[in-house]
Image (cartoon, rainbow, N blue to C red):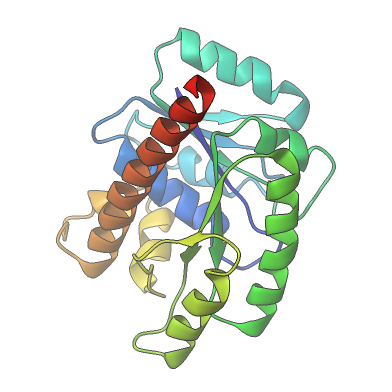
Length: 216
């Protein structure tokens, strides 16, 4: 079972929203558990109004994350997505250590860029690979390209940019995700689908590289 932790040191980066839409997109072809480890409980509140059975939603404290993931593996889950707290709260490191890959979303703003340095430091301390994704990006703003260039010095940056679209929050308010909306061909749905495709392929390459290194 692969495990992704979605983490950002700065609130407002759209971390929980991204975790939800990512997990739902992945659940179209995999058995997915979405773990709400954030005290704000955004994922749990979204799930309370949800009718669809997938992804499976679970609440977890950092102290119990390993047990929860072990149980998920036994139940045949293919992927776990962990929505981490928005700051380096006590136990956050344990959540990141439990992941195979850490996703760090960032808005294309100076405060967000400053916060990513702290996010990267914590990710590197766990020894787990990470990647960035530009989230809540305004359309055709020059700051997007500047942010991608700045982030690329600290790790891999997704070529898929997630726009600042009302569709994301509107879907959550209805207990669904953008890939489940009637307008499945919307730009929001396409962005999430393309991002999941890129991320899953990137993680497969990481896994292959790590296997080769272990065998060397």
